[in-house]
Length: 216
Figure 1 (tube, rainbow, N blue to C red):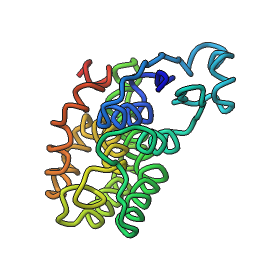
Figure 2: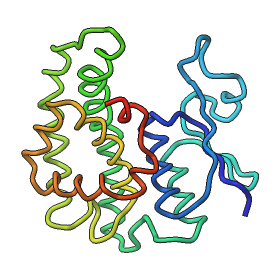
Figure 3: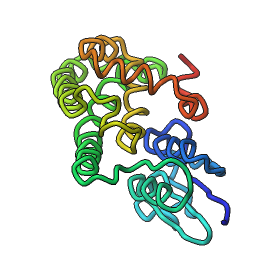
């Protein structure tokens, strides 16, 4: 099989979700860093890969793809290794439900409203927007409660086995828990906190560590 190439930035939540899928499947790949925040916007060559100028984009054996969900599903189905999508209908539906919750509600709230304001803004010389953080905390609680309810007593978010739901959630939770408010909220959801402790200890997480985490 041809080389797998991932285009994006190591700090990106969505790039890391794809990297986690590659790592869990044992797929060698090359990460090509792309700065979508460069002056003038994303480089022209990246616009050719992703018409919306976002990350990640992916190539494998002459096949080009963008959108992290599509990329992760392709990786799971194109390569050998442990399956990352449940075969049973209802478990697969739960996985897709979790992915939707993460994209629509958790990512903007846990990452942009809380992590970026509490952690990144001060590091970049800007005071945190306390009103934005305060407004986000009830929404974050709703996200965590929903994930806790879906997970139940199962070891992973979509059932008995690791899935793309866990790998999609992990980069979001990694950033969220860097904010003291995020860590405190997660600790109130004991089963979800235990899930996070086990996920955070996986070798794939160490192999894809964000440079923002390294700065902590």
